[in-house]
Amino acid sequence: MSKLEPIRGVRGMNDVLPADEALWERLEDTVAGVMRAYGFQRIRTPIVESTRLFVRGIGEVTDIVEKEMYSFVDSLNGEALTLRPENTASVVRAVIEHNLLYTGPKKLWYAGPMFRHERPQKGRYRQFHQIGAESMGLAGPESDAELILLCARLWTDLDLPPVRLEINTLGSAEERRRHRDALIAYFEAHHDQLDDDARRRLHSNPLRILDTKNPAMQALVDAAPRLIDHLGDASRAHFETLQALLRSQNQPFTINPRLVRGLDYYNLTVFEWVAADGLTICGGGRYDPLIAMLGGKDAPASGFAMGVERVLDLMRDAARQAADAPMCDVYIVHNGGLPSDTAALNLAERLRDAGVDVVCHAGGGSFKSQFKRADASGAVLALVLGEDELARGEVSIKWLRADAHDAGTQQIRVPAAEAIERVIAALIAQDEDDDDDDLIDLDVASADEDGDEADGENGAKMTRH
Ligand code: ATP
Ligand code: MG
Image (cartoon, rainbow, N blue to C red; front, side, top):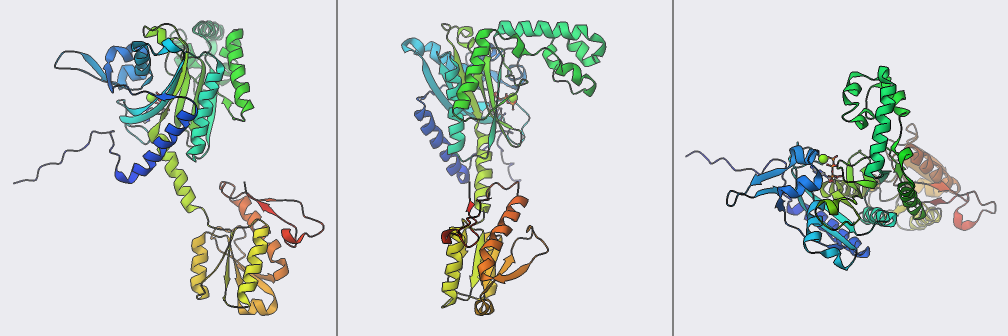
């Protein structure tokens, strides 16, 4: 009998295997703690909702509704249903249905699987997970700032590599309309400079012309009317206050005038967190019109959603980097016993005084086996105190890394009194070479004229950031 063909999982929908569980739990636990710290309460809504909710709540002419939704008819009762592609519409529905704003503003968060029929690739799946927060009933820029700072705290608590914050304002629907009219008028006045694409889009979607890749149109596009110049006082003040609040908390950001969200109901603040590889891990913004659009009593709101799989990828990168990080800068190889132990200890302690991380070999063994340990430690330099060095009051410095700054220098021997200075100079030179490696960052404070003992003979001191 031929073997049965195994049934495979659905494309773009992944198993989370036990090996990944610790990472997921760390993310979930950290999120729960940060949400609590900001006064957000968890809400859980069903995975399946009426298709109408998303058509109205996300908008008919969006990518999600046009081509990404898993919609089906329940064959048992004919209901049109959809697997949720995002959670904001469901949360707003639940808030309206249960009258949650009756007692005042509500800050809610959620986590769970979402479904979009997209082409699967790294960081883009058909079942993926989002964690998000929604501040409902709060109109001010301070609640936008709070959402942003909440995210920033989360990235810090998760030890993510740097993610950059981009912000923009979309103003109000009326201001966007005025900007659109100004754009059309401007491009009409320069009709002769428009390419075919731009002419086609002139009346249907003039904003898309701003995205042109045609170098011949760049100057024209750069000088086009900007939305920011069409903002009324209230929108402008909202945006400026948001920026001032972020600055007050030392939260860096860049204004990206091209940053928009796909959906029509977004207004005023929009923001994105972008990883070094250019992938957006989190997007958010204000959506004041949505609650009324879904049949609730008019109330302002803003929120964000992050892609869990993309955040987990960054956590994996960071964990890998931490595992690869060198144990020390310098590894001391020596014979062991007296007087070798004393000399090695003296050298190690003086280097540590100067801010250098040192592993001093313990447990004896051949130099060959000690050098193996030195290599494995990730140290830049090995300092060798053999019998000959001890007898002459010298130290050998051996460069351990293949990509060493001074590739020609394999090993030098210096008087013990000069060793600290030479080591620090070598580490600084190496650090400047490793400019993409921010794990080590060395500063040399100005030399102490009095030759303070504690700072080593050259008075240099290295600090780590
Ligand atoms: P993109 O432009 O990447 O398609 P989007 O605007 O559709 O993103 P949002 O709806 O704002 O994304 O969702 C918020 C976050 O959810 C995104 O920033 C991303 O990190 C994550 N995300 C969106 N779609 C997917 C997907 N198919 N697979 C994995 N993560 C996703
Ligand atoms: Mg998308």
